[in-house]
Length: 265
Ligand code: GLN
Image 1 (cartoon, protein in one colour):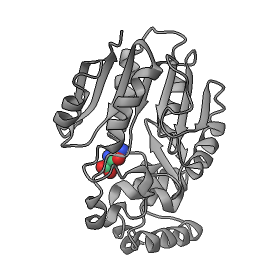
Image 2: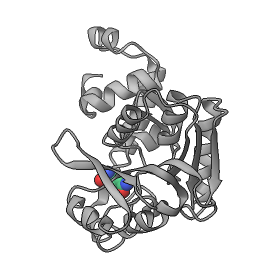
Image 3: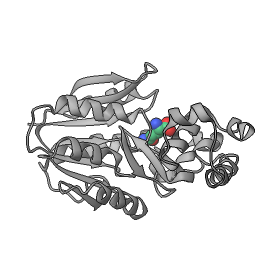
Image 4: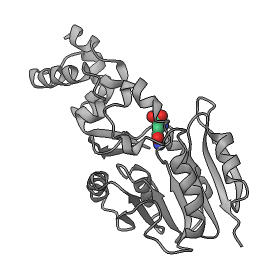
């Protein structure tokens, strides 16, 4: 049993014990024992982990902003840095009522679910170009029985009219293409959800161009960006009728979230 447990890092072990086995982790640490059913399952999980498959895909579970989500290879795994995007959104929308919000790139629907749950008076739309991703998103939305969240298949904002939204929020694909050849950790995830083209900014540029007409006057745009992208994003937004409101750093000190206000006439 001890040898078995050494095969896993502590964070993975905790996730399995709590989320897959529904056991109390502290009790487990005291006893360091599992019945034969759980031991068998643990062996299966370890076998999959040894092929480098992310634990979330093995268990088909992910935890984001304290919420349990269904996950499989049709969507990428929500990252902790995206929780900052949610925190920023909640801070800026405190005491606001009945706003209309668009999330671009639904994926597992982690972002729109957090928003729709935290702001029940808002109407939240979430788009994805991938129907496969939307199937997973739909499953999660029904898990949380949300009445104020609507999933739509759309290439970014293309299916919405002008002046539709108070807020647009997105964690777009922003990883530079070359990174995928080097980094096998990403090889299990759908490239379409992470690949931001040669310089990583293909979708960020498109969003900066296409979001503004869709935003209402003085609407807000919340974007998650990559570790080396802040300067280029700000330079690109220059002269496009946005005013920078805030830049938020992640726990590693990397500028991770930018917030713009639309200042179109
Ligand atoms: N933060 C993710 C990563 O570095 C990328 C997320 C994205 O492309 N939106 O793996």
